[in-house]
Length: 208
Image (cartoon, rainbow, N blue to C red; front, side, top):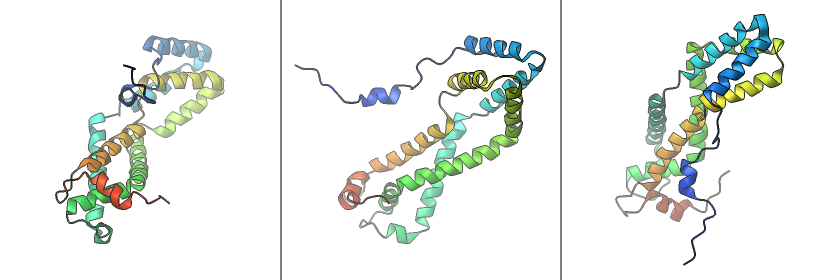
């Protein structure tokens, strides 16, 4: 029997990571030591820059991130409930089904808006914890004493090691999971998954 060949191994795609070989901690600190040597008497700038970077990284709270996803979904759901004209467009009886069909129909705009709100809120929140202006000013001062290329290479190392999963995509993935759960809920009247009802009635629609 011939082995089945898939265009994409979906399961492996869920588990795989784009950067299979991030720099090691020793490589990062070795590079930092080389930069400090190049900076000479201005090496304290790199110490300060790293301090700000590590404090920014330490602000990441993955438990709170999931809470923020649920909060965003709850806000969207309340907005649907408060707008009966949206729900009246769906030819079904179950209020929960109507709400979930609304999620499907507006999934693109929901994802875009909650992501914008998330980025705005995080910028405000983290600026209160870590002076982002000071971080950028320290970066500019570093560039006055060492060339742009080695500094950018060092920044890429930091990001690849300390932030392999940037928050905005993680937040978006959380939102996508919650929306997908609504795709799979069943309509009590027809016992069909909501996405099937959507395909029957609205699958022909094109987005703007």
